[in-house]
Length: 229
Image (cartoon, rainbow, N blue to C red):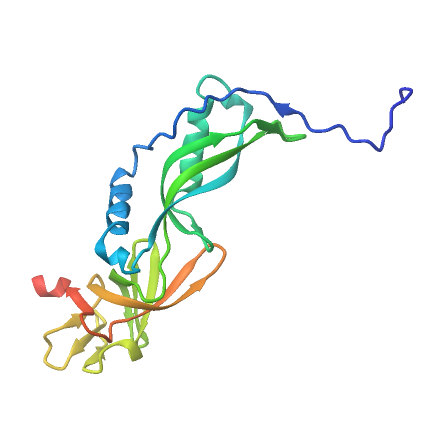
């Protein structure tokens, strides 16, 4: 052991002093339709009345990158990896990440001991989707059974119990399970489009599940795939 060294003192991990240019936040071109759609809903009159499910927020994430990606396109590699890892994921706190709209800042990298990977703190802007109790949604029915039916509105799965379906609709079993009115004029089956109201949500660390109802005014079937046959 060299003289004057203390084995109990750990050498601090070195920081990778790579200068990454920080231009003004640029809009990611992919998912432009989703971004415009989210902004349009957020700015609609219904949003002013409290029906707001899309939010434009700033989040942070530590991104790990292999040394083989270092070079003049380092920033592009980080942005591409960020899009791949984050878009389409769900956070119980913020909701579903619809699209990343820009990168505000990429900090200095920190070398991870024993691996060679470098961790970069990244601050980015994104559009998130978070449904709340009382929201009105249009959803597509994915499964029907005697307990009710499941529907999807974008990334959100919603269950509507048979107790929350109008009393004049009865369950019909068969090759295509469905709920049908007594006169047969209205039918809910797989691939039907329905307008429903969220009456409850369950939030986990990586998932948001909703309970809905169509037992209210102006709710119910808005498109029946069987009607066109």
